[in-house]
Length: 301
Length: 259
Image (cartoon, rainbow over all chains, first blue to last red; front, side, top):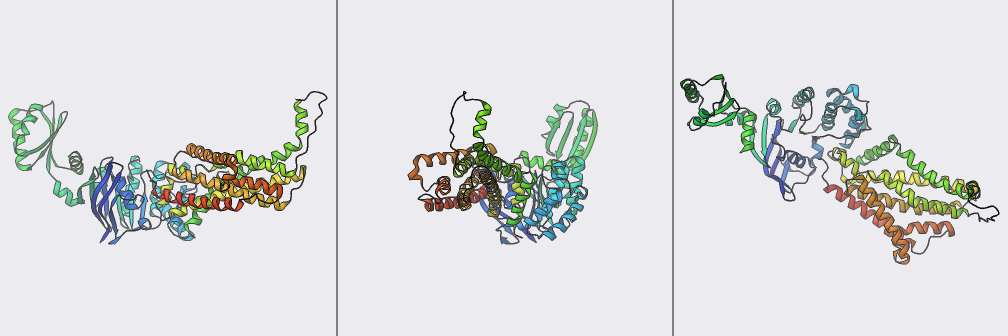
C-alpha cells in the first residue's frame, strides 16, 4: 500500500533551486534509502516531508489523502540531533513522548522500553550533556520512535559515527524495519545496499534513479573487468576504448576498470590483446558493477 | 495534559536547574534593599568617607518612604530591565541555534504553544522577581524610614509589572526573529530605553506609550491615583503586547528550524 506520495515537490531558497519538482512514492513497510552527494537536496526533501519546511510548490499525499500536519505520523531524526543537555536521557524521552500526545504514564512506559532497546538503560539518569556521539544518536532514534510513527525518517543516521556506533545503529534499523516504514538518507552506499529495499538516487535536486534495490541493480548492472598492471599501460588502454565491446575505461594509476557491454566477448578480446602484446599484468578480475559504480555514473552525468 | 503545559513545565524546570529562579530575584532584592539602606545611612556614609571639611553644617532632609520607593523603581527601570533582558535574551534564539527547537517542533506541537509557553515562563519569573524584590524593598523602607500605605504599593507594583511584561515580550519577539543572543539583547535594550527616553521628552504626545506606565507608577505612589491618560496607555500597551506575541508566532512558523 502506498504510504506517502510526493508530487512535483519543489523548494527554492532565493535563486537556488534545492529541489526541482520531484515525484516519488513510498510503499508501506519498505525501507527506502535516499542517496545523493552532498548538496543534492536530501535533507531539504526530508524536511519538506516531515512538515518542518514549507515546499515552494507541489504536494504530499499521506495514505492517499492530501497531507495537512504529518508530524503526528512521522518520527524524525535530524542529522545533528540536539537535546536539552540539562535533562537526563529518560527525562527527554518522556518530554518528547508527551509532546507527541502520549499521556505521562504511557510516555514513561514507552521511554523505558525504548531505552532498553537502544541500550541506554544504564545511562538513563545521566545528564545528556555527558553523552557520547553514539549515545546521542541512539537517544535521537529513541525519541523519533516514541509515538510509534507510521514513517520513520532518518537524516544521515550513521555518517557521524565510528564503525562500532555505525554497526549498532544499522542493526537497530534492521530491527525497526520489521515494524515501520523507514526513509533514510545517506551517502554511505554500502549501508544503503545492506538494509534498504528501495532506493532513490537524487542529484542536483532531481531524482536520477528510483526503484527497488534488486530491480535497479538488475537494470543498471554491467560486467566489469578490474586489471592491475606491473607498470602503466596507457597506450594500450587508449587504444581499447575504440573496441565495440568496451563501454568505459577508468584508469587509476596501475589499476584499470573496464566496463564491458558483453562479458564473454569482451573478456576474450581483452585477454587476447594482453597475451599478444605481452602486457605485464598482476591481477585480472571479472565482476559486476556495484551500487557505487552506478552512483558515480549518475552523479557525474 | 496539553503540550503547552508540558512545555511550560519544562521552562520552569529549566529555570530551577540553572538557578535563574534564584539569581534574578536576588538581584532585584539587592537593588530594592540597597536604596532604603543607603538613604538611611547617608549621613554616616558621607562621614566615613570624610569628604566634608570640619565645621560643615549639613542638613539632610530624610526622604519620604514614597521617594525611596520611587528611586527603587527607577533602579529597576535601568539595571533591573538590563538583567531581565540579559536573562531572557536566549529564550528562543539559543534553542534555535542549538537545534533543539527543531527537535520540539518535529513533534505535533502547535507553533503558538511553543511561543506562548516561553512567554508564560518569562512572565512567571518576571512577576515573581518584581513582587519579591519590591516587597523586600517595602519591608526595609518601613523598617528604616516610614511605612508606605500598602494599597499604594500594591497598585503601583501592578502598574509597573505591565511595563516589565512589555519588556520581556519584546525580548521574546527579538529572540524569535534574530539568532545571536548578543544582538537580541542589544536591540531590545535599544528599543526599550529609546522608547523611555522619547516618552519622557515628548510627554503629552506619548500618553499611549508603554513607557508611560512607569510614570503612572510614580504618580500612584505619590498621590494614590494614576496620572491622566492611564487608560489609554494601559489599553495600547496590552494591545501592543498581543500584537507582538502574534507576530512572534507567525514569524516563528516561517523560520527554518533544523540546519
